[in-house]
Image (tube, rainbow, N blue to C red; front, side, top):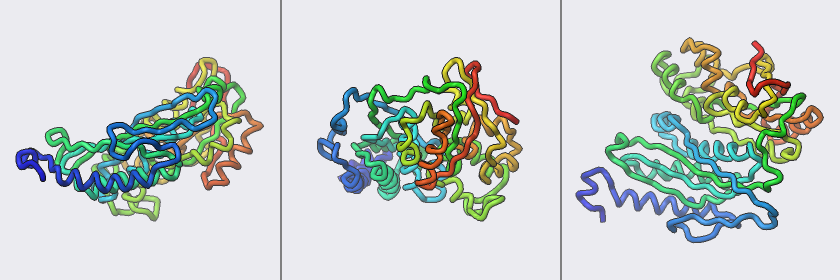
Length: 341
């Protein structure tokens, strides 16, 4: 039974227990052969895959930023849960790692059980897609820190790779071709600017048609962050390095994996920005430089590989329906990213 004083202060223990019961069912459906321990325990447990010689754990923690505000406006919560998983999978895929376990954190104020369950439903779906254990998580009701009905979402992923196979970017070399993988939109970055332009400057409603498209603003903004795992895993042995294009755009992320003696040349005419980015740039008068700094501009992942591997890389992505294109090259230089305007 809920403590009346705690409830008056903003924490409904009965609602929390109802949410936990629904979450337990979702977590049970996202266990794998590597899962260990009990659902609801203080710590999540997973086994390492058998047969590895020198297993290296690869871990990452991230969130989905202010995309949750769009989800709140729309009343759609499972998509941001799936976003969180796919974003995290891509972050460790850059190092050649396969995911083995995930944990989530949802914090807010007076969150109804159906909201929390919707978020975790998306997380569980993403985990099942990647054969990854949803090992547990935390739901925190924090009145005073969050406005009523608002929430934040974060997650931690654990992956594994053979130490000798781990990718760090040091194998990238002059002559490598850069291959871009199409994004499904903004993914999980740049939503503060996108919301400001689309809603405040342009005055669009959530269900207005996005200029230049036949889709709604809501559907464009809540498009699920694409996972590149199935497109890239078959060719990992040919890859010299990868960059997941998140906050900081192509320049900020590709630059993180370049060796000191290399620079990346991005052929900007090799693709056209998807409509959502063109709408934001035109509607908000946002410069090309700022667009590049904030958004992925349609390239959600960029991979460096030797030219002879390029066709196999494109074929692997084509087999799972992910568009790719050659977007530039690596040449001798001083660890920078250059755009050919």
